[in-house]
Image 1 (cartoon, rainbow, N blue to C red):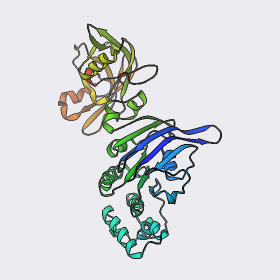
Image 2: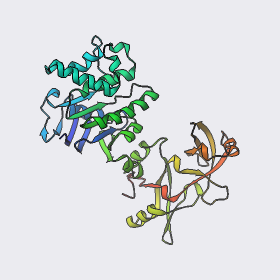
Image 3: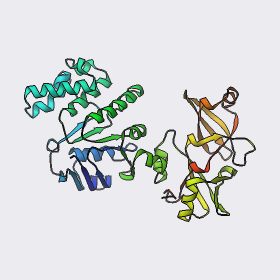
Image 4: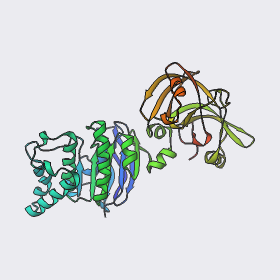
Length: 374
């Protein structure tokens, strides 16, 4: 078993600089948890408190039911992979991976077996006799992961392990970590500022801001039902469009009126508004770029806008548009859905008309910024 429990954990630097606030989380055995948020949100500090590299100001951290607040890192049965690899430059790959086993005076035969097995899993067998300086960034990160693997620890901690890699390598290493997770029977806690990594890797995601947990949930849960405006804008790429508008109630139906258009809220979202007894008034409307579609000029739900930026992404277009009020929106359109004539019109300076369906809307209170449907 490798459960982790954080109860009312707080980290204070100096007299009044609070980095982590009232952090409460139960992590199940063999679960892959991702801490995600912008720089300075407290995610790495929380990970380092679990590892024993940062002192806990208040609260408790338990691993398998044992409070580890006062235990040294080496006594917590955890393995950690750092952002900067932390490899010894004078040692070979084999010796770097074997180092934690040597510290425990593990028999040589067992050292050889564990290191060669980990190297085979990670595809670095041919590099075992090389020094780190002869390796690429991706290969060095595999070595760092391999060094953690050989320890057979209860908990596997990873602190932004892919942030130093280029985009292509990050994609490749993400896939390898997913495969690795299937072969290592342990609990993972992974820190990143990249929401794509969080969405693709985590069983559950812990989204943080200013030391506070904003939401904990599966990737699907935080994407489909963000608890507040921060989560809504942080999860998803490009980020969610947010519009100040009115929620209107007429004849038992709900409508929104962004930029003079009138769009009915339908499907499950309408049912949820009725169940909550939502009242008409000002709201912040959220619509993801991929849910905005091109519309006919005469459609009462159409919103006129002018293209200011056209980003060709290969399989899709990202259109940055400006509406009459001056607000900017992002529209994400699959190129396969476009005729040649339509594509010629989607250029800088052209006016287009867009809309969206009622079932894809998100609704936030303009004061609390909380999701009205929750």
